[in-house]
Image 1 (tube, rainbow, N blue to C red):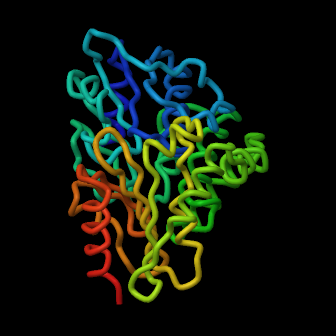
Image 2: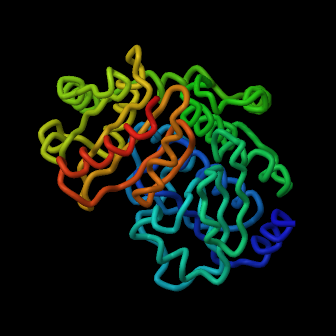
Image 3: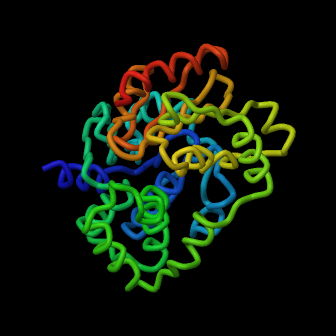
Length: 316
């Protein structure tokens, strides 16, 4: 049994590191912090590495213990959370690769099973939802601190319980977390309804540039590194922009490109029938049926043409 094996490896390990994907969202951060707190409760002293923490998540417990870099010596155990591929760990994948034992815990159907032990539940809308039963299996009580982290992950990855991936179990788990004293209205306000000034300015630019294709079934927009510099953007200030297109009547797929050092990071969202994960897999990315991403190491015009053409092939 995978969970039994993972628990045994945790018990044996002296040096443990917790990792998640680049450009972390609420599920990545919340899941990582929940695992960190759980391991501390088990008598361990893990490192948690998130090089760029979006400040919207600074309210979560134990964020002051997040590190930008890990140990130079190999870890006994590395745990990757909410990360479908080794590549998505980016520059800190070395901590995972060099570890004696490697574990992945995830909810992406596109997970490549790159660990020695892989616990993947593609039916869960968030990694945080998967973690609830795992932490309970470990014998750790889910208190208000852990509950706050987990509910942040669930709220983020379900779009506040409105995405199609939300299951009846999601509401049952949320109710269970509420019983720990978690302030759901505060979490919802912070992660869903509060925007930084820089995020607002980036949204304005993205909306002004928005184009439509296939009789309005595809929306497309982008932001550049220059845009981010001009508005003083910090990590995470681009979050939510892709949802602007999806919210428009008649749009089936929203495409948002963001310039990075490696090219353009594409975020795709669909409303009904297009599996955007299939599209992103063609570019080495992945995700879920209605939410996925990839990186295209080309110019804006080249990336735009390629991603739009692939999406067009899926439009009815």
